[in-house]
Amino acid sequence: MKSLSSMAVGATKALLALTGASALTFGAASASAQTLENPASGSTQSGLGLISGWVCEAETVQIAITDGPTYTAGYGTDRADTSSICGDKDNGFGLTVNYNSLGSGEHTATLLIDGVESGTTTFSVLAMSTGEFATGLSKTATVADFPTEGHSVTLEWSQAQQNFNIVSETIPDDPSAGTGLVFDDGVLDPQYKGGMGAFDEAAGWASCVNDGGEACPSLSWEIVDDETRGSVLEITYADEANVTAGFFFNTDTDESVAAGTATGLDMSAFASGTVNFDVKVIAAGSNTTGWVYKQDCFFPCTSGDKTLGTAGLDGWQTVSVPVADLLPGLDLTKVSTGLVLWPAKDASGFKYRLDNVYWSQ
Image (tube, rainbow, N blue to C red; front, side, top):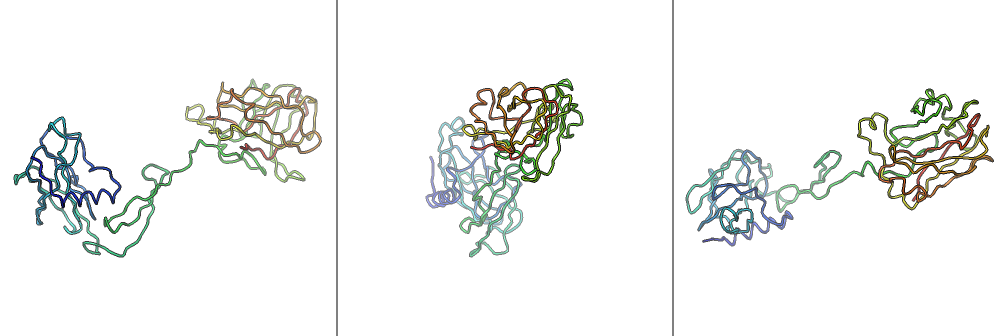
């Protein structure tokens, strides 16, 4: 027969409402006919909490605290996880306790089923110096790197529970979610961790990265001062560069790509937007056809080459490419370049400046 102490059950339900719990929290049922589960052996308790567990059959369930009183627990709450052992599920018991009233130090709780000792748990209590029930206190605190690294939670003091509750969690932005900025005022946005680079047919299609083009015979680049723009990027092709060679901004380092840890940037938010850049041709050289442009998403994933026509011959000019034109070849969830650009034909003697590269929605 199930015996239920209405006062104890009422107190337990009140505590559950305060904590936001939907049911008593228990571990999995054991092979015995009863288990005292909370507080866990060796744990430290404070404030208001639960002594809880389950019993298959009892007239009364009591909890005796060493050097303290014996309490009658509320008994008969649903425990579906005990039905395979008990043959029914109304086997849970719970007792609301102000642990502060026990005093700091080690304590033992003994489970009594119809007056018979049926299990114990030993735990410690840390009672604050304010006494059994602190009033008039107010405090919030932030715990960093919890529940996972990079996250944080805010704790707030609850007088009703004599303890701190988690009231909010700060979750960092998805590191793979890209923002629109790529390059401006001579500065590459930090999300392009792979830096600046180029590919060069004259080098067997090898890449030269973050070296100003030292390993690429056909082109080089540097930050220069433009008379109207300030710091900009200047890309210069060799006089004999009658080959295909292009400049790019990389999201990930070559090392992370080789290790299989590169993620690219998720630019899905820009699906209906444009990729924009300002360009000024300093010397047209042998190129009279214009530009080729693309975006990559880790080889062999790519938007494919897009011919843009001439731009920048008469000074700074803004070029805007609809992101829709890069689809479906470009996988927007793992974009690996902020921009890839090169002269369409013979690049010999070609020189241009690049500024204000960004994606817009």
